[in-house]
Structures are given as C-alpha cells and as structure tokens.
Image (cartoon, rainbow, N blue to C red; front, side, top):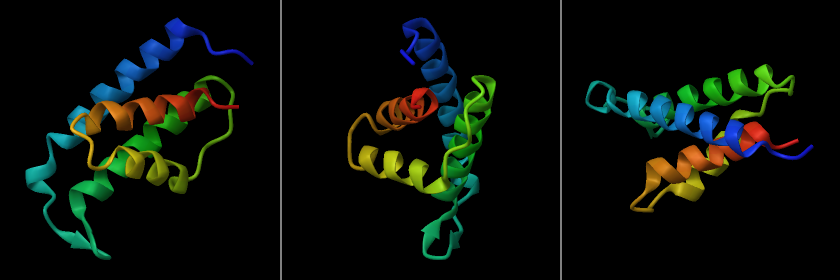
Length: 96
C-alpha cells in the first residue's frame, strides 16, 4: 500500500502536537521509575497510544512499545529530537 502524502503530513502534525503537549508536562514528571525519568516514560506511552490510535483509524494492527522505543532512541541526542521522534512515529503509523 502506498502512503498518501497528505494523510502522512496530517498525521505527522498531529503526532508532533501530541508530543509537544506531553513534553509540556516534563517539570511535573521528574520522578524515576525503573531507572527511567517519568517524563520519558510519559512521552513514550503518549506516543504509543497516539500511533496505535492512528493505525486503528487505517485498519492496521497496533505496534509494540518496543517499536516506539526504537524510534525514540533514534531521535535521542538530535537537536531536532521532537521532530525526529514525530517523524519516526508517523513512519510507524503508515508502515504495513
């Protein structure tokens, strides 16, 4: 199945906005849980939910949390972390 560029762009914008909203809560989520900062876990969970909600809209099965961790880790350390994380998440939405 080919990717509709308009749908991809709309989904990317939605995912980026979702991540920005989740990131706005970082100061309130400074606890450590299983060696991970609370805000990191919150952003991953939020993006996992968002990706799977969008995939369901397209009739696709959910992705694993490990898939989200992979795209998040590939964005880590980049100056444009938020954009790269959102792009990776959009790629997951539109993957077969």
